[in-house]
Length: 59
Image (cartoon, rainbow, N blue to C red; front, top):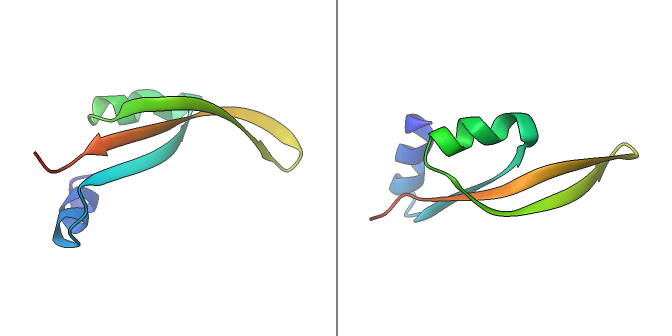
C-alpha cells in the first residue's frame, strides 16, 4: 500500500478509491480508507455487496 500511495502522490493524485468486498473492508479501513457508501454489484449472474471507499493522501 505504501508503494501505491507513493506512486499516486508522484502522479499528483490527492485521493485513492477502491470498491472493497465485505472481506476486504477491514483491511482498507486499517489503511485509513473510509466508506463512501455500500453498493450491490452483479458478477457472473450473482449479486454481491461491496463498499466504495476513499482515502485522502494529501493533507
